[in-house]
Image (cartoon, rainbow, N blue to C red; front, side, top):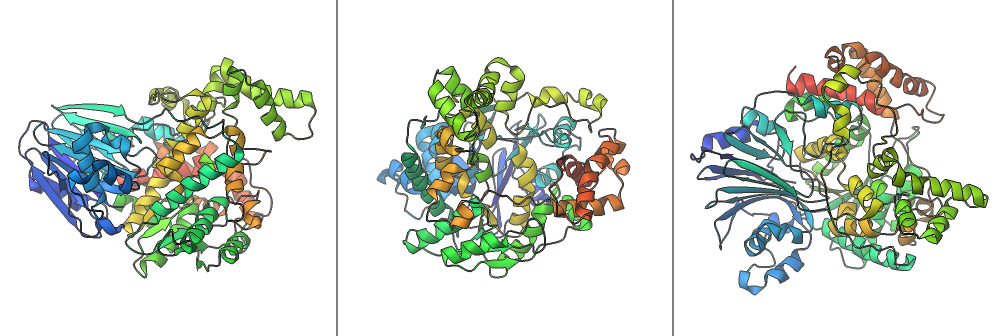
Length: 632
């Protein structure tokens, strides 16, 4: 992906090119195809170009409207170009080869702020309206393009990444301890906060307008979504395959070769196998390559499954080695990017994959990310069935989960999770925040006094209201789509791949496919106690049966344990900055890690310990970020 940035003076004084140059100079590595700066009146915009679609090659940003005074910088990709060009019609005189941002700007001129409702794709957009002196920022609903902003009362700034904003604008360095507390507690829920005090995010499906020295924010996306529970299994499969094909074709639109990760799991294998079929059918114009990392001798080695995919699809995957975690390299990354360090179980493949793609100039990497969240299924629709009096459908689905169990056992196991969210606030909160179980006790590795001081428990219950969602199932699923762990877990990864000239794309996050998931029948997402039931049915014949019927899953814990052991040798838990600042209990952090360390020393042959590794890594990651990015 590319990147964007800019600034506006609230008092109306003219923008200085020197300020824009400082932002460019302070920004993390971007702009493989050049950097452009524009300013007019009190506003200035920056675009770091990285062309990954045919239409983006040679484009010049910002885009300046031919009909109005609007100026736009556009980071991303539009996937429904033909539909939008047809909507605009011949009066706009836009050629079929028009850049995505030019299409978006023409649509803005036609429809105003509501134009964003028409876009399908992954994008972050900034539009400056010169006569109104109004800046509009927008993010796609299920996309991955970050967009952050700050306003000190005199100067408004926005950017893709924090370094250019913090250093370029000279922001006073202050910590947002509330957001840091969410991170250390392994319950990061804020859609708007960053670790930097005064630096905020535009949330997914969110918009911000800066006009007259004031900031106004709203969520433009959030339902309603069509209820598809009336459809049969065959109808679900047909619609899913149609939308999945559409998503893969859109994700494969590139200015050069496209490669897909292949782990051997259901999700990445579905992307690789179906893309191969679409190429053979002439619907994707070039083959989508596959690239795998393999871990012989490790419990998370998936070679047997990835090789089955190669044989079935008639392809040969590139195989890359894992990359050992290096603490010094991680610290330098924090200093250079102001991002968190990459998790060891992500780093071990990401570095090698990027290195391989860079050798011959490839720029696009597809992933299977999203399948675990959207396709696993849950029982969040059970309270809806109970509330609507659909008892037969409720207990029929319950019986499918425990075949052979006595009727009274099935009834009890079904009725409890269906009824409790209707009558218990704690169960309701847990269901509506599927990555956060509010029935659990507060994390005991966080110091209680600090937790109270930053208002941590209250933060967990805050959220952006989206009025269009219907029922427990849609509200629970949408919480997964917008869960803030993306900012924590994935943004550093995508920032790293972009620093290497690689854009990552995620077909399972396509807006149109996501809309289908929001309304799909919960009884078909998880059926016969089988997760990803709908995906498995849709991929009959496309996937090798060994993979399609696979019920195991690799957990990449071993390399995290190795990295944590090495980091604790360099700095003991009691010496970590979050401990010395009084935020965490270092003894509890050490105790959480001990079972994993023993498991690894014993040969990693037994089951993975049920203790939590997340808080241990989060404490270490925050230590590196505080020292090398924030500068403590």
